[in-house]
Length: 125
Image (cartoon, rainbow, N blue to C red; front, side, top):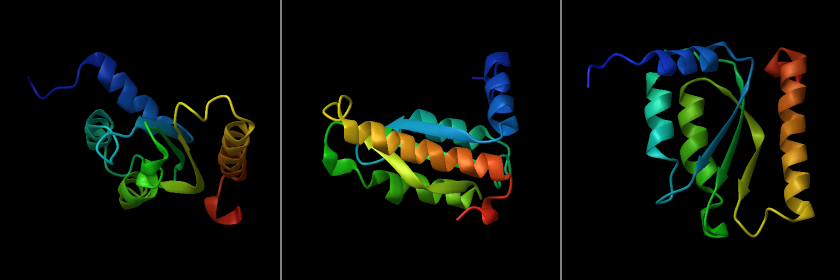
């Protein structure tokens, strides 16, 4: 390993840093976000997520890990000064076909869009 990101990885880092907002989706494994996501976040330049509206979402095998977003991913992104929206989406295989799942996704993405349109996260309640 050279320690130099490939061209494809450099493009991905630049896209994430230059985005107006983002949706971070990860599988939950051993009560935390994936190591691959953590490795990617570690490669982002410090400040790349500052003030950026971020919707966090995860998939998992059971409802027991539903709070992992609030206890693992939200603190990481808060440390990086991202504007993590209050709504999040956690889904298991049983949730995908339900109306409640669709309503959660619609609510969370609506909150993200409102932040993006406002331009200033402090102005959106």
